[in-house]
Length: 345
Image (tube, rainbow, N blue to C red; front, top):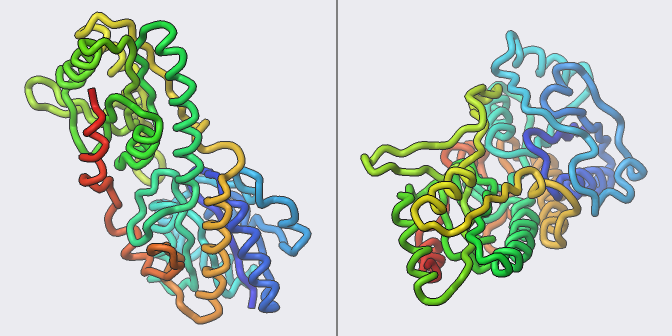
């Protein structure tokens, strides 16, 4: 048995923990492993390397991915599916472990339907994949964002400022809610709940009326501003789309900061955390979760359970259909958001 493993989409902490686990578990079963470079692009170009215990030694704590990544969509390439199937055959790959988020696993699901033996491992700092309670990378991103909010508290208080912190979250505000609650934010704006600038300003003014001289607002990059006419707007940094049809978001933090200063008169600044949330060493939680996911992925291959992915339910590692994972996004539990709103203003 020869297993191929690839990482696709945006990098995140914990990818190397999964790769290490796949190789270690596969070798315990006397399976061979090849690491495919640059995600799906690596299969199209037959760019890969043989992997052994030496290949994954010392990578558990490292951020990013030793295999590299890309946002390649084989279904947007002429004869892409046939090229993938032929190249996998030429490389001698019997089964494939695809580590990624909605886009990468979406491709994996389609390839499974085309006859490719593939299993998935759920990866996204946004935590928006369905069929699993948590994805690895999320815990690290929340911890990084929380530390940033903690640091911004001191400068906000020192200068009597309002500081807006923009975090990642295209369609789901999990990072914003968790880091905002943990960091004691005074308002949290998420894609699941459209907001009006006037209402945010009113909360901040009410807080300052109680004698507070500073405020922290956390906003997810995909949060939608509703104008007074009832129209909602998603703020883009570029209208160009990638191979999966996504536009590049960014800039909502600056828009909110400008609006707050205009409506309240309070000096306001914006900080965009951006790719800082993706970088650096994974937390202990993400290292352990990634390891458990990787081991289970190889077990799925051993048992012939293709078209499925590793998943977390409670404290148990289980498996779920790829179709279920990518069919709909997992958005923020509004009961959790109601808890967060208790501390607004």
